[in-house]
Image (cartoon, rainbow, N blue to C red; front, side):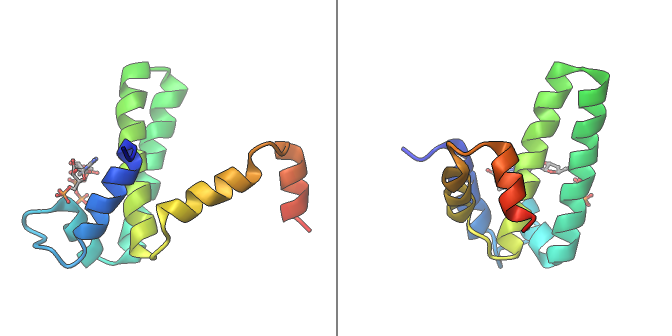
Length: 105
Ligand SMILES: N=c1c2ncn([C@@H]3O[C@H](COP(=O)(O)OP(=O)(O)OP(=O)(O)O)[C@@H](O)[C@H]3O)c2ncn1[C@@H]1O[C@H](COP(=O)(O)O)[C@@H](O)[C@H]1O
């Protein structure tokens, strides 16, 4: 069974071109990829604020908002979640330090 992120990504993808009065994701898509990116940034900032405050319950909720808006932003630019998973898998087992050095070349 697909995990919740994979299922949510599929649902979000299915909202492209759907009625934006019935779907929040459709409403975001209709406003364009720049707006989707802006909303992701706003949600990330809200999560940062809760992380700094140390409220675990609110940080959990904000993290869910961040993941939802990340998926919308990726979909708005036709980046597949599967490809993000593949990139994470490629990095698995390598040290973060080595990874950083290989990317800065
Ligand atoms: N997981 C989510 C989810 N997380 C957060 N949000 C929405 O993100 C919005 C964030 O709140 P904001 O105050 O920042 O935004 P807003 O004022 O409502 O809207 P803006 O005009 O600022 O964009 C809220 O409206 C939340 O409902 C989500 N909306 C939808 N989903 C899921 O996405 C799927 C598709 O949803 P629809 O597109 O609505 O069918 C469904 O499975 C939903 O459960």
